[in-house]
Amino acid sequence: MKIDVPLEEVEIGMEVYATSTPPLLGRLKPHPRERIKRIVEDFLEEMERLGGFPNFFGVQRFGAIRPITHIVGKKIIEGRMEEAIFIYLTKVFAHEPQVDRRAREFLEESSDLKEALKLFPRHLTFERAMIQHLISNPGDYLGALKVLPENLFKLFTHAYQSYLFNRIVSARIKEGLPLVEAVVGDIVIPLKEGIPHRERRVEVTEQNLSTVNRRIKEGKAFVTALLPGSEPLFASGMMGEIERRVLEEEGVDLSLFNLPEFPRFRVRSLRRELHSIPMDLSFELPPEEEGTLRTSFHLFRGTYATSFLRELMKAPILNY
Image (cartoon, rainbow, N blue to C red; front, side, top):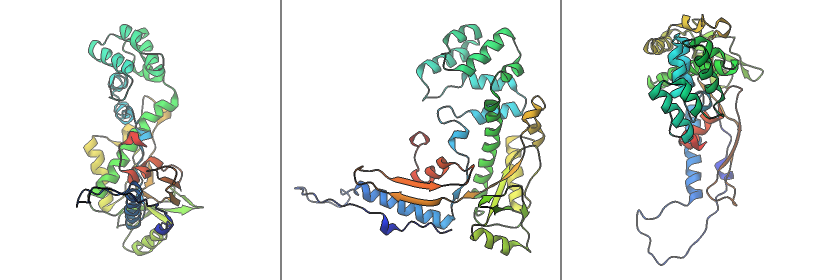
């Protein structure tokens, strides 16, 4: 992959200052614009070397303030509805408003739903609806989940599916297998009209390995990882071993994704690209905004801009 961002087009303004203090080795610090230029240079070199960036699901999938959607999703998939509900209701995180934390902590410590309802603020609409259902229907945890909007319920189960995918990609990287080059046993998908065609899966063999890798290098195909669901779309070879090992470590069987208590919300398996390529990538250092870097880019549908920005910024998730 070639990222077309000539560094000579990134203009850096230099300023000259007079000082009565002689410069000492180690005392001088780079000008902010120089530091930003260095970050961009390092980033572009890394993108060039890797051929893109890991196609992780971004923080939106899991929650930036309360990253619990995948945890709740796992409990639902395992059929542990009571645990799913009380994790959602009581798990406290530092960046939540104090009034929210106080309500959650009270319920965690007391298990008193009626008193807790008085403390849960009005903006916690879904939590209040679940508590009200449990007050009226003690022990009906399945029913309490059904009061949630369908899109929120699906967010939980899909977040856990996404978490598993991220784990699989991380495991492949840890094993030293490339993201932008196929090995025997991988499953690749081609581009169709400029979009990854996930329904057309090609298994990599000794016979087609060189052809497949040529297509990948041309940006016309992608190596994939399992996005786990109810169907066994495993790769073979080393990648298949990684996918099965991650599921085994999580203690999850694919049959659980059928969701017998919620059959119409069954989670289907897919193969998803291991890496993504930023298109039309550009950087700008606006002279009127000291220390600011502006970037513009396009990504394939379903790719998270936050995952790309994380690779660029190397900063805590609440910073972007």
